[in-house]
Image 1: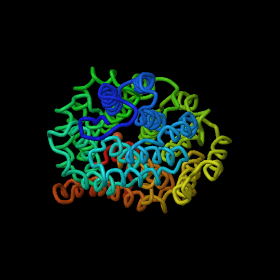
Image 2: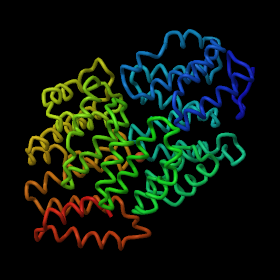
Image 3: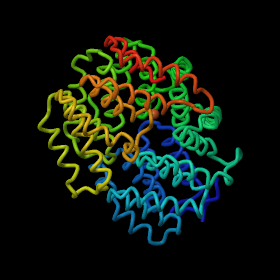
Length: 455
Ligand SMILES: [Fe+2]
């Protein structure tokens, strides 16, 4: 049996097939366009290549839609894996759990694979990708840490390991090591978009706004050679410019790169909706752009695998005047024909009610729904930077209700979340005083300024 560059064995292929498989994996990890075509070409040459079928399944699953999961030829993959290796069969089991919508089960199977085959990069990247959408921040770190001693600078694919480790560390606030790993991964492979993205997060959370703009602008020419994932990197650039008050720049990024045309791709929906809402929260008229988003999501309402996307769909439906579909979304989340986890569904439904109430100018009801869930959001997935949109809904709901004590409390909580208490507590105090002034009454412009800059 032939082995890959990390010593893992493969059924149904040969040395050349494995080399192409590794190239297809790297293509996917780099978020290059038309990755599925590469896998299909490989399957044409090697129809019994079990792991290539698995990779095809994982690639389709990464669309984040229940509808797409139906396009995975699962029964065929299951029957072709009967004579496969233990490791391969476990991948097929993970894929099968995923296709049923049971992502928690899939994550457990990848964890098992890594216990035995710590150099299984595909299991590692699948697992960290999905753990992120489960809000399992510490588990992301632990998953990387438990296999870290097996990975050295000389291990093929090392950059893809530390890139994902970097992002895990960033999400638990370990910014120094996160930055070290992100920079090294990008040095090894400048096309490693997950590592580029992780570095953008470090700069965002550390309030290094100017550096953040430079970091992404430096890659301006490279980004269009990647797939739709880079829309999210442009979104990070949009956030940096928003923090600096460069509103025209944010709008032009939105129209050119972030959401240039109607798209149902889950990341585009998240990026587009959350950026438009952030702009509105600081008093910007975004024109007809919500309609573009509605065109994107109208056929996919309630079909997103990760509930964090549905919160953004709720924003789109309420901002584009489609209240009927919004109530349909709310009820469809507890339609158990699709596998949903009860706790996550309940939280999402309450947040959807909060968003709907806010957009219907019922600020008290909005607050009643969002407030009790503000520290439970993480189970819906998404980064700290992305989840901030819900804090902004809450702060604005209290502001519009004239509850200035509540506004200042929530804003201080928000700044605390971004404070490096061991390094820069003085920044918190500076913001604390500025926020405290809201209690005595401030103009909308001052409020917007405070909302725009988290730190
Ligand atoms: Fe991000």
